Image (cartoon, rainbow, N blue to C red):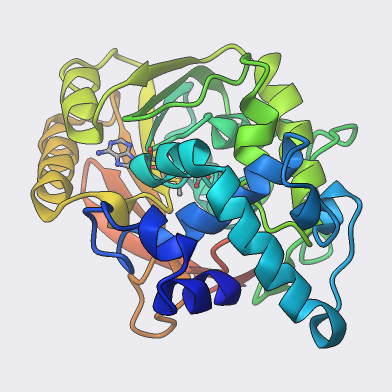
Amino acid sequence: MRALAQDLLAGGPTAAAVADFDGIPNEALLSLRLACALHRAALDGRAPALRRYFPSTGGAYDPQRDAEGLAEAVREGVIAEAELIGDYLMGPPQTNDVGRCTGLLGGFLAFANEIDAPFDLLEIGCSAGLNLAFDRYHYAIGGLEWGDPASAVRLSPDWRGPPPALEATPRIRRRLGADIAPIDVSAPQTPARLASYVWPDQPDRLNRLLSAIEIARGTPRQIDRDSAEVWLKNQLATAEPGVGRLVFHSAMWLYLPRSVQDAVTAAIVDAGHRATADTPLGWLSLEPGASARAPQACEISLTMWPGGVRRVLGTAHTHGFWVQWNP
Ligand SMILES: C[S@@+](CC[C@H](N)C(=O)[O-])C[C@H]1O[C@@H](n2cnc3c(N)ncnc32)[C@H](O)[C@@H]1O
């Protein structure tokens, strides 16, 4: 990113590549879109100069020795990959990170425990929907374990605070998701596409992502291409007696324009007002910037209806490296 920024300021190829970008660079995470496009080129076997520096493609980078070589490789990559960069600049970043399930788990289980009924999971901004299979992963949390002991996705965050109540066994009836640009887990290019959004020097994160894609390929779910507010309004229009519904989302709220945030909130709160003890509704969220106590971290909150009481459960690192649990 530093090499890209320097080249941009110097009026190099990066300046030309972003000239037509019509978002607000910081808000739209322009630097992430650019860096991930270059990572994708390397993962796909192109950009040979960059591959020498990315650990994800067998390379190595020493900041003392390699800064200039990397800057040159970045410039070459930007020139050679104009089409791919255009594609990445157009779409929202797709960091689908199952690490966020470590912060969400306590909320999923609190909901399951309290309603004591089967329920549907409804994820908005689900990307490839990897977090819809949260119960197929293994968790080691605060000295306790939960989930599938044989799972290839193993999550063991740095857990701060008391462990969450882990005794619930969620009875998930359906796994439903929506995204304006969903990623099809069965498509052959999906592993490289999602992997491109992981930093090249984080092999553990990369491996668990690839394992989660395999698990998603074997987990029945339905994912629709739709904007969150439209989809939720339809999904929440009716409720089935004896079945709960849990709306959840992570790292997507800041991508929504204010009017869409308001429409999503209205759709959930309206459905909440119609919820009964026999048709309970929950809203679980893990979103950055929501907590004054930890502005760089994500706040984890759970609201349940009937009642509509909102509980802040804790905060978490944006990729789930740590969770501070304060139920
Ligand atoms: C950074 S990803 C997070 C993916 C996933 N929630 C996670 O935590 O791993 C943000 C996602 O929000 C989606 N998104 C952005 N605006 C949306 C909208 N209006 N409705 C639904 N999804 C949206 C993007 O397409 C992208 O897949």
